[in-house]
Length: 211
Image (cartoon, rainbow, N blue to C red; front, top):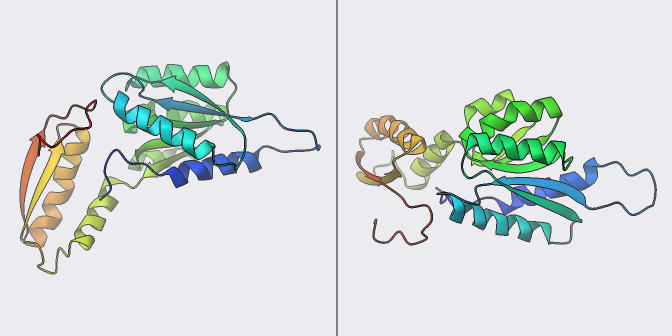
């Protein structure tokens, strides 16, 4: 299972490349840089995560595949502020491609507006099943259920290679989801689960003491 703070640079690079081909070119005149909006939690409890993603996007955009004008907006981990950021990017900056927001809550708040304005979203989020309602919405993480299935296959669960599994989850909606999804297959495989619920400070990179 991938760490929750990692995200796919390849997915971001693919979006940037697609943006190049999406914009029609009818003349040989040099085109201006492609505007890409980015909505991230740059302040608040997920600011450390947001800053890491920001640096990753800037790195992906600098690989020589095209010229991009990256316009960053702060959601502060708030669905309301994510909507405000979306409105600014689309109404004032006139962007047609947005990377973000981060997380299902912010993404679902913005998605209906993206459909209405025909703006493509690449959410930095787990692929929530509700995302399928929005044709303009894509995500960079596998769904929790897919991650759990991969985990069981990787560690030989069902082949009796593991008898006890400790699970560290944060106190959140996502943490609750892992508990629900792991419990049933573990029971079917005869695996004993030991859960520990942690209160995580997202602005620290040091988690050794928690472990």
